Length: 473
Ligand code: SF4
Image (cartoon, rainbow, N blue to C red; front, side):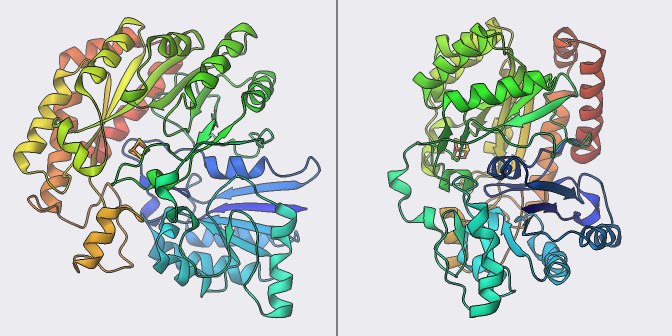
């Protein structure tokens, strides 16, 4: 079988990331590897031909991208996957239509965070796309490859295929949001070799030869402003992850970015996993997202022994209590214990902050900026609040007539002003936050002390230039 993965070029050459649960224009100079594609590729058989073209990481113009597609047309692709996202859906559609035209006989499945909302599901399916991938697991490539032929022959869009939407229905995950439980999946090793490109990076990497591993996709938490919170959590078995680590060691990978929204779930199993990784000497230097409420001394100690050097935690606001308004519960005491323990273990901490939550005034935002500087953390990521597809906040804004159903926005170019602060002012405040957080002598010396090698220094310098270019100047 021939399987082709595509990422469209991005408007104005921005570093736009598109996946099922997230769309973002990166704040520094990095671009994530397409972790959904990596997961889907684990369903390809050994002799399947898997190929990938990424117009964003290669900074292709639309014409250059189309030229490459015409070359690729020489192969008869059974399935073409393409992604889009709320950061550029309306700009992506003409490119997707061109893809449709070029690969007329192939099954084309799309994926992207916008497809949590019905408007976008209806829109893309009305444009002759064959399916929407809403879950990268349980993918039956053989069944998917037959959709197009049957659709053209029988003029139908009714297919009962797991993880794929082929007709305009409500997103399947929205039905039982309250019953979200971790399900365990048995999956093969993804095709890491296919998705290697020097252009991908992640600011916390300490080495350039890296790849992305997902141990749990989706999220066990359900914060109202986040569309990952709409995705049911699916965890790989420890046996599968150990096999993946054996493969990555064999291939000489030096660094891992875990794409898990919260690393360490399910906790008991993941502690066992870390013990096995340490015992079998498979540890590879890594960074990951972590939730403050997952704080557990033993877990953090095991992570450190398994070569974890950085954790990214959602702190979001100085006023942690008010986050409960958005269904997010973070205990200040636990947060401080986590930061202290990470400092004791010399694990770097990056705090994620949101500026302009709907209830926040400018004073609240300024308090968050001050708070970020008081914490003993190494990095801070300041995001302007945006209405994520599928989030209750977005549904409310549509109902109140504040935004149309087809509105797209992302955290770097917010178009919806919060109740108290305008969109332009939020962007200014984000610049101020970055300037004040990073340009401190204390921060400078801390960064120097934590450097591991010349390679690490070069990665950090590159990211710093990106932060200055995109967020400060
Ligand atoms: S914990 Fe993080 S990823 Fe999960 S729902 Fe909350 S903000 Fe989203």
